[in-house]
Image (tube, rainbow over all chains, first blue to last red; front, side, top):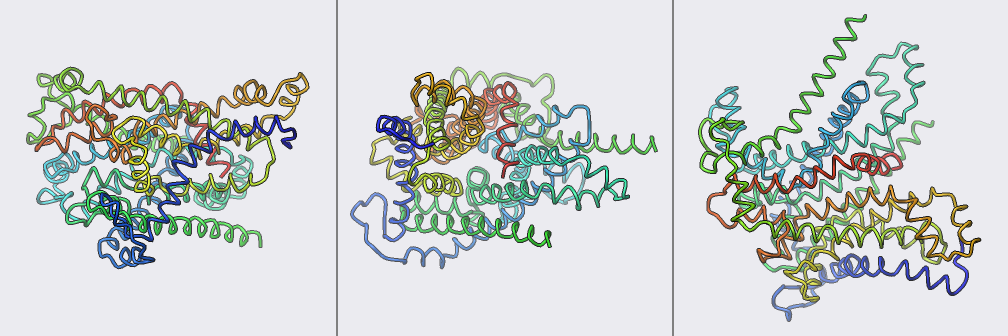
Amino acid sequence: MKIGTNANRLRVASLLLPGLLIFGAFTVYPILKLLVMSFFEWDFGSMFNQTFIGLANYQEVIQDEYFQIAFQNTIIYTLVTVPGQMVIGLLVAALINSIKRFRVGFRVIYYLPVITSWVIASLIFRYVFNTEGLLNYLLNNILSLTSSNVRWLDSRWGGMIVAMVLGIWKGIGWNMVVFLAALQSVPNELYESAEIDGANVLQRFFRITLPSIRGTILFALVMLTIGGFNVFTSIKMITGGAPAHQTETLLTWMYYKAFSTGKFGYSAALSFIMALTLGLLAVLQFRLMQSDKAGDAL
Amino acid sequence: MKAKKVIALSVKYLLLLLGAIISTLPMLYMISTALKPNGALYVFPPRFFPSADEITLENFGYILNKGGFLINFWNSIIVSVITVAIAALVSSALAFVLARFRFVGKKLLFGFIILTMIIPGTTMIVPQYELAVGLGVVNKLMGLIPFYVAWVIPFSTFMIKGFIENIPKEFDEAVYIDGGSLYTVYFRVALPLASPAIASVTIFNFLTAWEEFPWANTVINDDAKRTLPIAISGFFGQHQFTQWGYVFALSALSLIPVLLIFVMFQKYFVSGIQAGGVKG
């Protein structure tokens, strides 16, 4: 509809403005400021040290050994937790979709980890994975799988494993709900005719289910990749980046550089590198899925 | 053939049950730890359930009486409720205009709003902190609310816009013919008919504000201004030995409103997530 009269223009503006003002001041302005800061030596506290240094911050970030560790950790976290939660979430959704009783009950229970806050879930995992904690007792004293208590939180990979197990555990419920809706929208006739043709369960899954829910898979992939790069609270609560910054992720390292060393310019450059990486990944994922679709059509 | 089906079904239920146990075990352990006396938390062997004679409410008593944590509950409630109220109002207004009117730059505006959903909120924390310092809202609840509102606007607008687009335009036209203005359409047609979508985003926004940690942890230092997540995490800085009994008692209490909302509004949760997933 066209807006038309001047009085209507005012009314439309009055509806748009409050939202745009808040969004502009607290989201758009910080994004632009971030870009500006990334080209400056911008030390917090000393308001006078704001010198334009071009791309030096970006160079410093990329050459920084700790940034490289944090980057690797974030990529590994994403590569492990995203497929992990998607596969398990889809499996749970398929199971729930194939039963008749207690569907709602299971859906509620599997969603509980999603609504548990990151702070609380991280603390529980930290407590369970403690050297004297419940898990080591189970592994060592009950199942005898290990010969001594594993010091999970004292090594790079130990800490990363705890964070990744938490990430998968907490994400399954969301995937289950998303995939359950997708599975329910696949027409039943497709399965019936495939069954008549003698296709087994696996064939039906790969030939009918997966292609039918492609759009949902892409949606989940993009959302979860963003979520994977967003990992912050769990690392901060479980390892705090220790030992010796070996378990830092992009956001925890960015935060440390900003608020523990005052290097706002460095952190701004890091944030921008991260945002660009995510944007590129999103485009790439969309392209991949689309070319896949085109291939099928041939 | 029938026996085979029964076995297959039993295996399915068993697998689902196993997953359900794994999903709930950590929360049960949290509650059981909160019910143990603080000194008994690292006894060997560790026990999942407290023994009958050691069950105690002393951790909960400390949190509710001596610890002064009620103020944190109150802070979280104020911040979350005001955040969702403002967000619902401004996002639905944005969504209504974007869904119903054509104007120059509309596509660009909507595209930009969606684009910001890709960027993790925490990446903006550095310039946002300078902004908070500049506005003088550090250590104030006002240092949280507008930032949270701005944070949830894109997703809320996106969801509500999709819903309003499915409302037939005839409803609008009927109001205009009766001499109603654009405001009448917004308040009498768009808001009531889009209320399922608004309810759905309101629940998500409430949880976002209720559990937000990185920003609150950056802006608030004052004990009396802390929201629940930073009050919980604060146990680590204050004491040399973490008092897990207190940590988990406070955690369990802070989960109660979340669980209540989840159980009461379950269908909005599901429809909210699925609307994004199936369309995407």
